[in-house]
Amino acid sequence: MPARHSFKPHGVIPAVLLPFFDDLSIDEASFRSHLRDVASVPGISAITINAHSTEAGSCTFEEQKRVLAITQDEVGERLPIVNGIYCDGSLEAQRLARMADEGGASALLVFPSGITTFGQRPEMAIEHFKRIAAVTDLPLIVFQYNPAGGQGYPLATLLRMVDEVPTIAAIKDWSGGAQLADRQIRALQSRERPVNVLSTHSAWLFSSLVLGCKGLLSGSGSVIADLQAQLFRAVQNKDLALAQQIHDRIYHTAEVFYSDPFVDMHNRMKEALVLMGKLPRAVVRPPLVKIPADEIERIRRALIAAGLLPA
Image: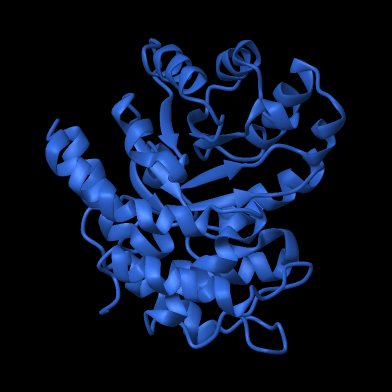
């Protein structure tokens, strides 16, 4: 088994963005620059691609393969790569998993199938993950959505999944509430074979990390990976005074990135990187559309308040 197959997802894992030209084709040069910028941050443990942040739902199979190849070329020797498995069907999930394994990924972030918005049985999730595990030994990260939307796995289902699919190594927790997040941390990280909980509660990151997560996996790491790494380190060191100071800076970005409508979160992050001089443009693929000027101004003011832009 290659060494990368034994990667245990942990620590600070930014999910990067995917720049596009005005004609909606991938801007590879800007993507490479963005990868190098994020990968240079001290204290991060991996990079995530082909997920929400890279607009995977709008990318073809071949484009996702190319995104992985570029990422491997730029940062593969320095950092593990987490590749998203974003699709509805288990057979397509297998095809993406094979591609990611062959392309050098170190872990797979498995999104829930959209089919589950109509309801789910525990056996559906178990079957989906078993089929992925049948074609690759890469560690799997379960993307745990908010149960209120129909796509989150009940805790009992999650525990069955972990029991029956040994390559599940972590969850990316987006369950939406502190009580359930706490339950999951206690249930998963105390097992004989611990499963790490990675917070993606970026709107309340400080609070979620204090509960005891083993790391975080977040799209806002495309903009504030350095602050996230500092925050995680302070929490791990139990320096809550320092953690609070860092949280006070992150708060401003969280307030604008994760405002309504929530779907524009990564759209806003692109605009932030343009304002910071790190991307040449903030083009998104339809059905996403460019956000209005007044919202971009709110992002600019938030970056100033966070100390990321001069006043």
